[in-house]
Length: 186
Image 1 (cartoon, rainbow, N blue to C red):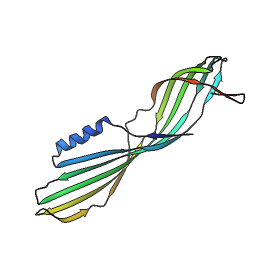
Image 2: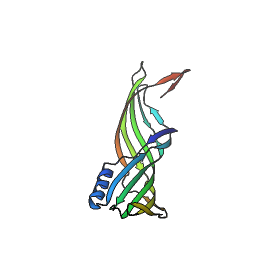
Image 3: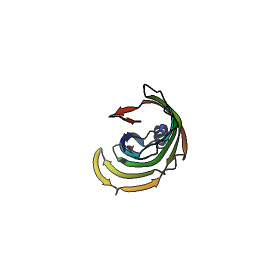
Image 4: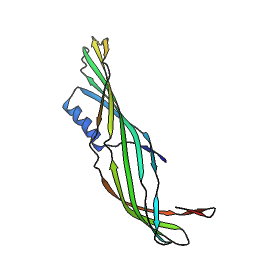
């Protein structure tokens, strides 16, 4: 079992918000924060030794990851008599994937250092995103807050179709086998 931290990155996220701001001139500010998530995985490995120096192995792993994105935007029609609209959205993203590296390993006899390489096959389940949005409207008259209304929050849950599955990667590594109490590990 392994624990990991994970976050989501998107080069298009900032472009998307800039486009919205250019398209809707009432948007006066916006802010995006990425929430790191904790994930865990379960896995193991199976090896077959052809000799003391050469072996092949598979290391299947299933990972469960969760992270999030929070954004806030302000629409302002301010002229001493007007409205300011505050919108905040919290999005939780859940990803499950299965990774299967198929590797060949060469071990240097005396030092127990090894080189390994091969392919990794990644199968990603359709990630889900659950977003909850809250909207607050402030109405001003003669520069003073006249009325505040808060819309009931609404939640949207959907699947993301942005990950190709399966994906293939090249895997390469260097390591050292450990010998503890006469037993060899790795």
